[in-house]
Length: 115
Length: 115
Image 1 (spheres, rainbow over the protein chains, first blue to last red):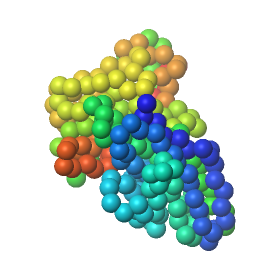
Image 2: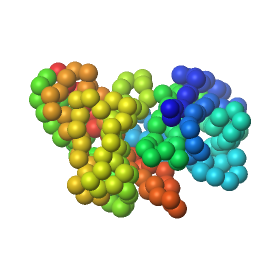
Image 3: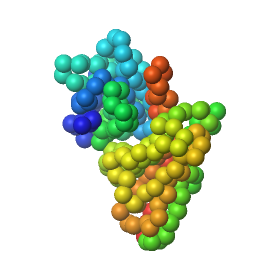
Image 4: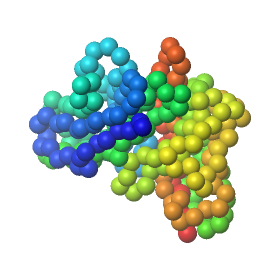
């Protein structure tokens, strides 16, 4: 079955430090992977995606993510966190080899960046 | 571009009432989705559609119905509102074909309270 897991409910990091938000996935075919961010009382905004090609994907606001097929992971990273990065982050996956090609989200990770 | 437009933004329903949440997109996207987000939780897929005239159940379809008579519109119907349907509802759309796959674009959400 298609699924995505975000093992951490919350990640705390000091401003200026690197951050990592973890995501692992399970699909029967090849995955399309996405990261979204949600600020309070707002809809979801797209950050970056992995479709094919380079395993390191760069996205908006200085974020990047590394696709690791052997570990079935797609962790979100940023070299230097900002207080304004504090938000709820969602990983999502599509299974492109199934007939029901739907987009499934993880439970979300709340990132808190402290000054 | 308007993108994905959801109406209404807020609604309070009494138990047993019915309502339709409207969703429209002007990007000619083939895929459309309805998700619900409960407090402190991730997004659960209610229904999705791969094109006009085609709909399919997601993870939590009970108590809801959808239709997709046009490419642009994907309304979500609640027939007999229950307190368990109190949530924030998000509509999204994307292009998913053999040669083009975009990220999902989200509406701003509809906050529904059933009392």
